[in-house]
Figure 1 (cartoon, rainbow, N blue to C red):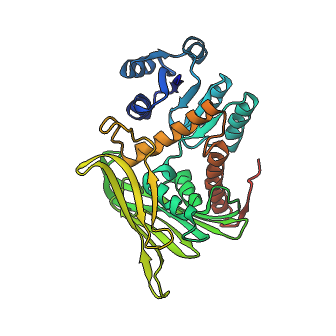
Figure 2 (spheres, one colour):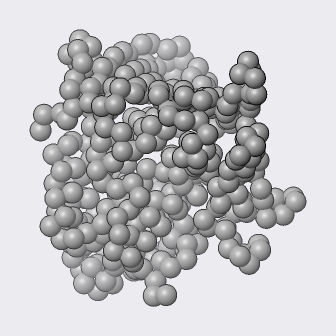
Length: 375
């Protein structure tokens, strides 16, 4: 199979330590070039990854003929560079958010549609193995209809919104948002990201999203949720017709508590999740297996799509790398087969729109905001 040719557009840290190694390990793709704004940053990235480097995007596309561009730039430049890459005729993997303004997101989507280009968003949270097995359990019908979904420090902004929406189904249509945003002072603490100890303020964002079919999504986040010993909680939850699921944890060390109804209807029956590895002592992740206790469906299984049949020759990726690899291959498959990515730009746009709606509602004193937002 002829490899899909890929260029990395941007020299953010993730370009070098994350996307470069992932692309080397994935089947059916070939990293051919990189682009950066400055000569120094472009050269440094190109030499690190062993590919041609450019500061002129038009020259890059003419000389190395990539089919896909992975846009990995500074946080504020997503919209600008994403549009520039689309106008060059590249299928795109866009880092989150798709853009900070809805007008920028719409411009990227319109440019891609005009050129018949595919867009996928690097929204990996729902693609991680623990999330995938929960979605497989929900899809099995064991839980019945999910009524309410919560993202409680499960991820910032659009990431947390995406996790919350995934339990309800990405086809569920939000219609109204109520938000509350507050800033509070904190005592001094050590920040791993800033590598210092000083007093800080936190911004808390809280939102309630009503969906067209009467279901509900609840979102909570704090701006210091990733690196403060004061805010260690990490949880997502869903309440369903026949049971519930709760993720509880300290930082990334999380546990899943999934339950259905025990025979007799008087107690919960907890589902056991098992990780299966290539070897008895480790190796690559083979699968996540849910032992449900249900006689009609005792096992629900998620298979690692990146496991190679030749034992020991595949990557031993952690969960987040598996999630991002899923984003990349969603786009690669869409380009190769002329299908649509499994998540796509409209979902990424909606996640960002919901965060903006929470903030708009808060700015208007907590008044509900109807969707879609005014252009």
